[in-house]
Image: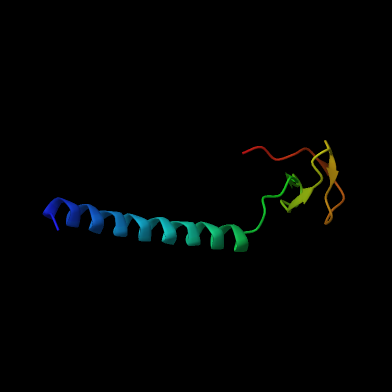
Amino acid sequence: MDPGQIIFLCFAIVAGILVVLVSLYEFRRKRFEPEPTEDRLFRCKDCRYVYTDDRDVDQSRCPHCGRFNSPFVF
């Protein structure tokens, strides 16, 4: 075999192994990572409790103290 063919073959094998490993890693990550939530994040202005509520809610009542709060913006 020509030395160029041997180098190409070694490179192709290493690249193939890397593709398989990255594919397996991505498959496992997607399988075990939690799905992103569509809920809004709220933080009570009185008791500082952080909670979530549905996406379509503009004002949400705090489950601890009962105050209505606006969505928290980062």
